[in-house]
Image (spheres, each protein chain N blue to C red):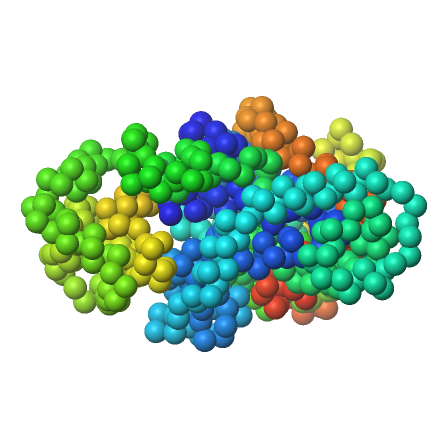
Length: 219
Length: 387
Ligand SMILES: [Zn+2]
Ligand SMILES: [Zn+2]
Ligand SMILES: [Zn+2]
């Protein structure tokens, strides 16, 4: 039956609307029931706690036989989420999809992906390296992103002044390191970019000598 | 694309949550759920089982096996050759289809009767629990809400495992069903006549010129083979021992050969190779799934062709879906449509939820942890439900 997809999606949307106890919600974006927006709150006890995360949902023509397409609308700092595009690396969105999975169960899986990053199967290699090098520093950055992009705790101090966004914190770097190379006459944003790419954090810092960084900065 | 939201709103969807929660009428939701396919969420149509024992609609399963050779529920390796008709399940669904409107009405009456007679509870739970369902119905004012709560315990645990079925948006009169072909509401009694009369006015959707006229030829009986084979075909489709069509490896076949095979089944031969393969493979699934139903429930080949046409149309519409760059702005602009949907979903929700919480305090907790039948995800869900 050709309306099977519509019927199923309709049931799924209604299910989410009716289930007030659920931690995930699904909204329509436009007049198409096949393009939706999911959202959920960041899991407690993680750097994403207190954030509100939105996900773009596209239901393909052969749904539910092929996986729903999901990507983060809200920027997330996470090894399995592209920090640029929001693309997600999660098995059930690819080979491990099954037609008995639902939009709701998939959103809940995304929520739990935030609890348990898989740095060995990364979507964002730089973020994954950061995670592996220093989990503490990674979590600090992820928390900062949650505050800036997902309305997480601590935003009050920054309200109405986005210019105060700390680019060093956004990149998960240390101010002292950025200052040091800026003092050599390089553009601050370029310094941040290079140090981020080289994963100049934690135990990596003594391993990367200054010449290497300067070389990169001169490129 | 305004049509989509309209059909979304008017679409009648049946769902286990049409019934009161377990705390009110134990077992009814679970029964309705047990008779539904976990792929499409509908009551089983031509149910078939795999060797792992999981059951699906034949067409749902066949379409899924075309994508992936595994059981959707337990992920055991599966193939078409494992498919066995589940005749008893089909009988159960047939009976339930017939009884459902009545049971639904009874269950509502039961709930309102209970709320009217919500006098202080009497303690007769042990006796009550051992009574047969039939006797239970006859108890008028003796049974009380507290008795029901005692019964609920085991039900809750069961529904924890299988309550991921979506809920329907609206309450409707169950005498009307929506026609699977044209989606119009038709009295259940006359649905077969309606379908046989080809729905009077099939929706003329935006299919492409040549392909459309080719389909028209098929239905007007203009194509070369159609006239002579029509009468024979219909009889063959309804014959009990009709043979299923073999699976085809399209990659080794020429476009010409696929066209011939389509012609053999009196199907349009227009479109590129991908379209031809899509058309033929879906036809094989429709045809074989139809044979998995009992003979008196089988559809005519003519009707299967109409279904295939609809599938093809929705396919070409689907690929045209627009891309929205600024999601939030777009959503704001379309707020009204969205709000209508929310409103449509609301009435039922409030009535069910308030009742369930007042009678069984645990039930909202249970509903929250609804989980899909796939094992890995179940674990994940239990974690998030604890928050
Ligand atoms: Zn099904
Ligand atoms: Zn199975
Ligand atoms: Zn019709």
